[in-house]
Structure formats: C-alpha cells, structure tokens
Length: 437
Ligand code: PMP
Image (cartoon, rainbow, N blue to C red; front, side, top):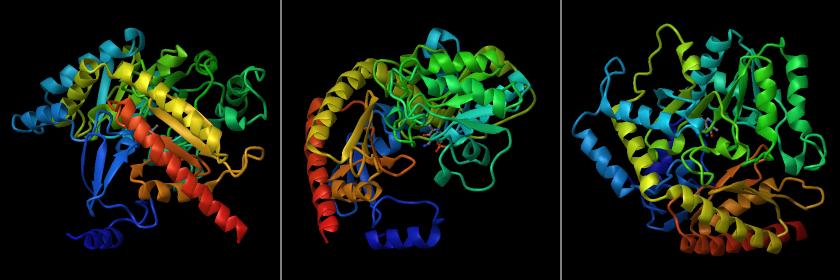
C-alpha cells in the first residue's frame, strides 16, 4: 500500500475513536533500536518508546531471536495446559517482586485485563466491592477500568458502581492549594475522609499508579504511599499498584516503581514494557489474595508461550545489560538537560518523573499556570519536523511525556535535547506570532 492508501484505509475502516497524533497521522514503516522510520523514509529518534512499551529497543536482536525460536517450537496452546515459558516467567516474577511477598501471577494480554483481574481478586479477598481510585489516573479501556480512570476524556459510557475517586498528589497543582512539605501530605491524609464519607467504611482496596502515566507522570512525594496504604489497610482494603507504565526498571534502580516509596503492595499489575511490545498483561498477588479467587476463569491468550518467551527475554536482557542502573544514570542526565531547557523556555512550568519516565508540563505563563494545551499540540508538530518522537498526556493535554527505550546512552540524550530545544523554540515563535496577530 502507498502512504496515502494506508491513511485512507485507516480513516475508512478503523473506528474513529482510535485517535492518532498530529494533523496528518504519521505512518510508521519500520524501526530498529531507538530509531523509527516513516513511510517517506525519514528517521526519528523515539523518545516515547512505542507507548512506554518498547523498553529494550525496537526489534531487540536478543529478544527477537528467542521469540522466533519459540514460534517454531510452540506458538500457542491453551491455559488448560502447562507450558515452560509461562512457568519460568511466573517463577522469575515471584523472585523480583518487592520483599518477595507477591508470588502468584495471572497472565492476560493487556493492562486493562490485568487491572480487571486485580479488582476481582481484591473483591474476592475482602468480600467488599468498593474500590478507591485517584483523580487523574488511567487504568484502561474496559467498562470497569474506564470507571476506575480519573480523567473524563477517557471515561466513555456510564459510570461504574462501587468506585470513588480520591484526590491525587499533584504537587504542581495541589488540590488543596498547599505547598510540600508544609502541606503535611493533606492529599494522603484525606484518604480517611474519603473512606468514611463516600464508602460504607469497609473497602476492597485502593488502586493507584506509583507515577500517574497518561495523567502526565504526576509523581507523589516520598511519604505519600505509606500514608494511604496504612489507611486503606485499616479499613480492610488491599493496595493495588498499577505498574503498567512504571515496572521493569523504567523508574531507575528498581524493578518496580512502587519500591521508591518503600511500600509493599498486595497486588501489582503490569503490561506494556514487559514483553517489549508483544501483548501481555500480568496480575501478581500475595498468595492469600490470589487463592481467594475461586471458581472458573480463563484468559485464552493469557500466558501464551510467545508472549511469555518475549517477557523472559526482556527480563534476561534487563539483568544482563544492567538496565536498572542505566535508567537511573541516563535518566538523571536527561532530567538535568530538561531542567536546563526549563531555564531557557518559559513555557515549561514543571519537570518531573523518575528514571526514564520524565515529563514537561507546559503552561501559558508560570504565575497563572494556565495549561498551554494548543502550544503542546504545536510542539508535537514541531518535534515531528525535528524528527523526534514524544508523547502527550495530562488531564489538560499539556504534558509532554518522555519514555525512551531504557538502553539508550548519553549521546542519544544529547541529540534529543538539541532537537527538543529546537522544537520548543519553533513552538514559542509560532505562539508569539499568533498572539501578535
Ligand atoms: N494502566 C495504566 C497505568 C496504563 O498506562 C494503561 C495503558 N495506557 C493501562 C492500565 C491499560 O493498558 P492496556 O492499554 O494495555 O489495556
């Protein structure tokens, strides 16, 4: 197909709800390591890593070789049989979860399904149906997980019963208008009021992302998760860490994002980067929680040998290449570069995140913090012109999300910062021209 034929077919035959970036969608032809090529042969530096999925580089040789070998050995069988790649992966996950406390896995094919499974397990274990989620969260596209999600634009269809939303720890736009640390974590303390005022007083659990992904990499202060998990446990609930974006070393130095907050969750969910882009979802739980899910439930593609082989290969690669250290070091280097850009570009209101999960929040002016939503769209177009891929997010659509493959080096960061700087300059010039008219 030509590029035009692809674009026409996309428009005519795919649900319009499948939105694409840019005024004219970018048609991607192929990719290798940190680079992606479009249908016109232009090469881009990928600093979104697919969509926080391509953690160890596009078409990673080591991962692909193992997947190809597995495809020729056993491509699919049913979850009603056991298979080695699934057993190997489950055993490995049990050995790397925080404190070794979460030892039982349930495999599916996406983050949404992983979260559905977690909610089911929390409800079976506690006997309660009531779940607390956070404002600005994103948990998936099923009816249940849209109900958990705390951003109106991603909540299609009717609200779901049994879910209430607590405020999030959004320090840049504190829901209470306070400043950290003199706020004394009012956002976290408020969890008790939410439970006492908006639930029956006995809850199944709290689901939260250690760093809110689609919400714009909103990163809570270090005390936050200890306070909220203690409160949730006090009222009978479990803590579910949605690590769809934050797991597998992404946040630097740790396998799981929640480890930065020194809290051991009762359930962890993940997907995205686990198999470097192959469809996989996983719900990992403490044994007593997993054992509470009684009765029949099956995910046809869950634990399939191809996806689990890819995941095993990704985890091996992360260990062999010491990726946890790389995300920490190169992440700190990128963070410094972004802070330098903030000094030069007034449009950058906030820089935040951990490891190689970093974001810029763009504002019209730093005092009012009015979200620069149109300028963010403009920046995306400029970045495309400068051949760099970046992600967008935030409730107000004004956050640039960066999550490059975790095996990049400082040279890639230098190149990226040059291109992003040029894109910011072009974007500010375009904004200035519009406001001068
Ligand atoms: N949770 C989080 C934190 C996510 O970022 C996403 C996907 N963006 C999901 C759940 C849902 O994952 P999926 O799209 O694979 O269903």
